[in-house]
Structure formats: structure tokens, C-alpha cells
Image (cartoon, rainbow, N blue to C red; front, side):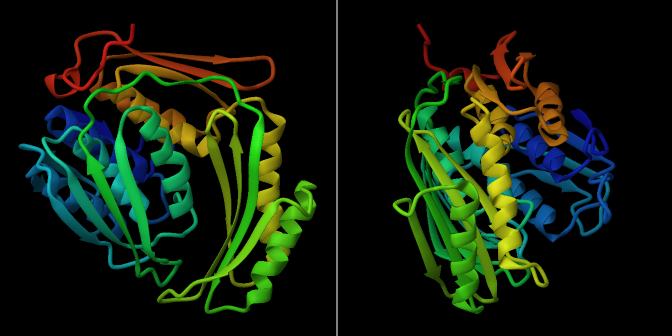
Length: 356
């Protein structure tokens, strides 16, 4: 039984999700205390409780402390089962973050799975659907995973009500991944989306973002109207290089915040990434650690690490025998290398391919 301190580092919900994911894939029980101690409203909220219940369903787990507001959880998994799953958060809590909790285990299950998630698909402080699909899952496919995602309905904060469907095939053999050099840019696009708010908001965001990035009129720009249970707005910039790697940077409309301000925030993120030579953005760096650990190792280069990423790395090392090297270069990019230092659990050994 692992003992995890939920107040470690940035003290947020990622500690819970990563701990549950690794408990499922290793079969080891976990007790998590001080859950979300670093947040204004500590303990389990609806989104986190849904993640706990999803992990319990996938792994047939016994639970203690699985209730709203709980600061302590005991999770004892039995056996991971492939199958058809449906998890409804009931709020605008992130579908993508719930998926993070169960996806690693389903990649190692004994058969294909389908996961339907209802809740927030586009909300601040979580990966929006486009990032999930085109950046995170696309990178998993390069690692040997077979995962596809479909957005059936947008769910903006605070109404939620979105729906995504994920198809997961078990990994036959992980492939080693090294993302160290950024390729030449081959495609750039700006997309602004609105639901139940004036179209001119999206138009202003798209044009402001194009102007701030100094992208040409020939760059692909599109403004979309969608239907969702509540009003909402996003604008994103996507950059794809000739190595097939895509990064997406997203802004979310807020009441009382001008469309131009939302676009300028996105432009600042894109500019920081563009000035760097690192291929992996900050958000992907955080999410890539666990898949690389399950694959037995890999390496990538990214921007300076956030406290969120450093905390996630600490939790992974509590469950898996990893050697981790973090090297900061003179240009402030950071190279992260992971490798196994001992025999991995049997459930992982069988999925790791020879790398010679």
C-alpha cells in the first residue's frame, strides 16, 4: 500500500489522478491524504469524485473516503477490465482529466474499450478537446497506443453538458519516443468557436490573434458556431511541424474580459513557445511523463518545468522504478530523460517492445 501526501508540491488534483492511474496499472493499493490541500476548496469535488468512481469501475476497486469534500481516500484495485464505460461528471468538470485517470489502465487491459464522458470539454485549467485529440492522443499513438476520440457535443464552463467518446485498443508493444528537435513549421491555423454568444466575438479573437502573431492572411483562420447546453467561447492557435508534431494553445472567453484580451493571452503563449527550440510545450510535458514511464522510458525537450510537472514526476517515482534526468540548457530549454532502473510490474513488462 502506497502512502501519498496530497499536499506535496502544488497540492492539486493531479496528485490524485496520477496516483489512481498508477495504482490501477501496478495493482498496488494507495492511500492519499491531504487531498487537494493546496487549493482554495480542498478535498474531493465532483470532478475528482467522478475520477475516483471511474477508476474504481475500471479496476473493480474497494474504496474508503470516496465522498464529496473528503481529504483522505483509500483505493484498493482488483483487476482492470476492458469494456464499455459511461461516466457523467454532472458539472463542467473536465472530461479530459477524468480520462487521464483510467486511460493508462485501459491501454494495458485484455481487450478494447469504449469510454463515454459527459461534462466539460472546453474549460479553463484543463486540456480542451482539440489538445486532447490532436496533441496528447496523437503523441500516444507515436508511442504505440491506438486511441481515437470523437467530440459529440461541446461543454463549456460553467454549464458543462458536453460529450466525448474514446475508443481504446490495448497496446501491443510500446515504442520508444524521443522528442528532442522541433521540425520546420508546415501548418498553422487559428480557430475561434462560439456558442450562444455573438459571432463577432470569435471574429475579433481570430483577427487579433493573427495580428499579434504576425501570421499572414494566408494562414488558415476559421470562425465556428456550435450548439452546447450553455454559452461559451474558445480560440486556439495550432502549429504543426514536419515531424508530425502539433502543439495547440487555447484561450477561453470570460464574462467581462474583452475578446482582444483573450486573444492576446494566447498570442503570448504561442510567442514563448515559438522563441524556444523545444518541440514539447509545457502542457504536453506534464501529460507525457506517465505514458513514457509506462513505456519503460523515453526523452523529450521542453520549456522550463512548472511546479505541476515537477509534482507529477515526483508521484510517478513513488510507484515505478525510474531513473530521471532533468538537464537545463543555456537556452533555458529542459531535457527530460526517463528510464527504468529495475524490473517493472508484470503488467508493464509484457507491453514493452525491444528497443534495439
